[in-house]
Image 1 (tube, rainbow, N blue to C red):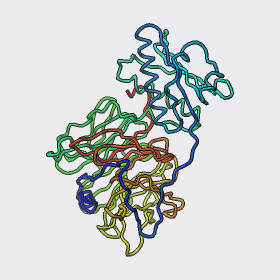
Image 2 (image 1 turned 90 degrees about the vertical axis):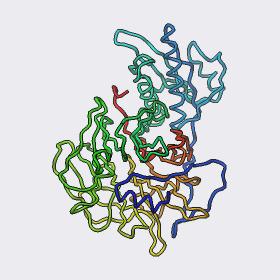
Image 3 (image 1 turned 30 degrees about the vertical axis):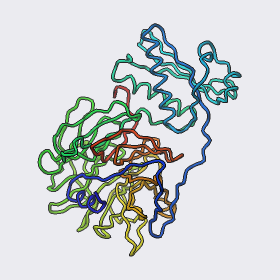
Image 4 (image 1 turned 135 degrees about the vertical axis):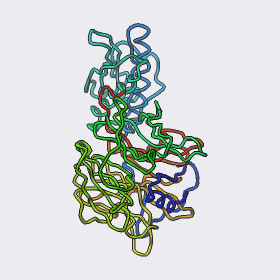
Length: 457
């Protein structure tokens, strides 16, 4: 499906997306955005070598839980793209105390040790982070974990892995999170449903069963609520799901029209969305916590959709076709409404097609999808800094056809869609990994959750 058709369907209230496979090893197209010089700009970070000493536990069940925790944590630390996780170490390094000289001889800078322990307060995962170079324990912690067969076990281990990332780098991890996205599982069926998947690609599950188009999931701060648009009542309306008890409610903002592309304010009490059709369309904000007080953020004869808030909630980035239906662009304006300024690299008379903005939760950067002109027309993931505009535009993907970026809470990784699945790109190294493989279907509109609280297994 072409980008122009995608924009027309979105404006009509249909959540249809097109995407392609970010293939490795295929010939690169010469990518061009008129008036802008693009390049892959990655940080040349030194990845500290890190190893995990085999975790241990008491008894058969404790040992099995420890082995599983070690495997989960090793994958999480590798997926953090902050370390070079050292594998293929001799079995003789397991057990006993930490011999720093021995580990240093294997070129390891950081070492993680762990154990699963049972006590009066329940089962815990005790972990320590060692600085091998300086022969000392950097940090240690104890994390409550359920049984390895419990649905919340993996998420509990993810929280411990995020602690390791924070101890080692000073930056948050993003393992204890989920990605929500919509997907059509039958190519012959136009209906889409909302799915959830853990940050490591495990525990894929279907959330909605509307048997209708269900799209644009948006996580609330705290990770306990999810808003999305569904056509199950006939006209697209916004629903909010309580993830703890599964209850759902349809928002009643009191204005006719098609409600699409919701986004939560960082405070969690307000929700911005696009309203199409009716007496007056545009971007609106609704006090979802109080279930009242609809306010207009701006409208007109053009279509404004896909709002996304800045981290402090004072600004909104959004997509608008005010320069022409064939050339949607990304704009930024005050969150209370007002004059908008162009963020995407539009050049007069040279076109340009940019959609799907998502504001980093920790910085002034906005990611979006842009149509690149080359031997083929493709979409790639781009990042612009609202402080500098498009003069320092960064292109995170180069091959394939990639859309719908959404930032992780660490402000470093982004999830996006492509023809055969859902992918994650690390903005620091450019590493891409597939999160969900989709065959004979289409994934759309991924949204990365904030860190999930304990009890949200």
